[in-house]
Length: 212
Image 1 (cartoon, helix red, strand yellow):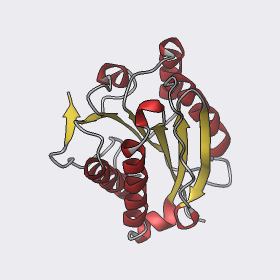
Image 2 (cartoon, helix red, strand yellow):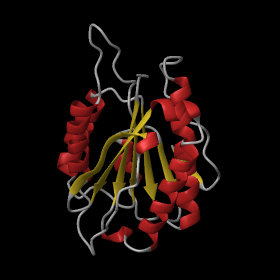
Image 3 (cartoon, helix red, strand yellow):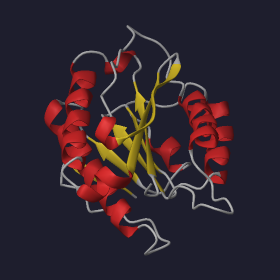
Image 4 (tube, one colour):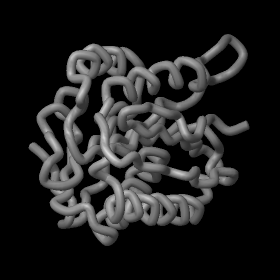
């Protein structure tokens, strides 16, 4: 079996995402899957997982190979908190359970990629800061965080990663472009594994702003 490239997607499903934003995310995710499946290398190595966070945190889909991945039902509550810290805690537990390590007789997985999208800021800021350290103690090949919409707080995401992008709007076209770019980032990461120790991210389209 080929070495896997695990890809974790952490998606904000708090009440402010209800309606058009979450429907736009679903369309964007399907676009991403369709594009990834056109790449033979991705079909061979990419495994995906989706974790959602609002007042509850759930792994909707454990690591699943791209060919067999079916988008899960994503529901949004009427209102509630944005427990991003708790989501990172669950991510670390999933990483420890799912990501294969090197052993004497076989190579483990490639370093996972992590994509986080939120339209707000962590409600559990104390736990969030604790878990930022825990995530950094795990070996991720790259972490990309997306601040979606005008209320998203970029400064918290910058505590976790230096690769932060922002979206001015949360409409269907913007999310489609964002998830198309995510598929490109996964493919670039997939092609560059083993060739470079530095994370590689393709330049985003004009609708996606790099946060400096």
